[in-house]
Image (cartoon, rainbow, N blue to C red; front, side):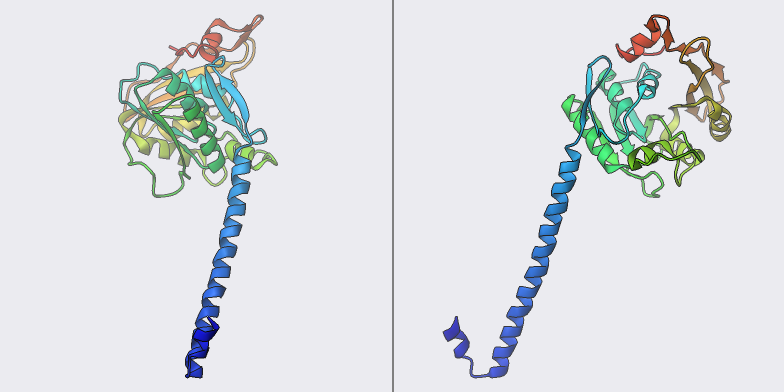
Length: 289
């Protein structure tokens, strides 16, 4: 290499060559630093992603992975999944705010011949939900990380037969110090109207929306949905028969004018533990109706 350099009679040409070599070496070091930093971050992300619990739904019929320190699914998800029945083969279902996949995992277990997509704003929850779907062999189920406030949706509007959702309950409540839980439980920058409006946009004409929420939100939900939906079916949920209903499940049909119906309540507990109906839903995976 030295002999090669010494053949240069033009010192300026030699200096230009040295300058180019040093420039290339400088760029190489910068790129090398970026690559090392990326690999380090990627390892940390993967390490964080590997932290999960081994949880189960429907009396261990479904295995699911959840972050031990983050948001976890609740019985509300399983109850809402029971609201859907008699789905046609090939039906398209969207789970909005899918979290760790509680609702859609139960649906994939019950309905093998439908297509189910989940939208979740938290990347780690969507990734864990996809691991759960793979673990259970649910090839008809996929989760996508997406913020529904983004004007560009990953799917066409008016393309789903059913939308299921368990929206964040809190609007101005005390936020959890845990970021994952706070994001899942609090409405943040999108309110209930914005959330439900997105759900309606994703439905085909005369498609069905299914949701679960706090009982005190019923009047607001009906006010939001009534201009564009009807055929409401409302299911009050009681922890025990002597207590007040703390949850409601609502079915609404887009573009329908069919009158509202309030069904008999769903009571979860009696003196022996789960009621027969709750046991059939939460442990056996049966439909509500």
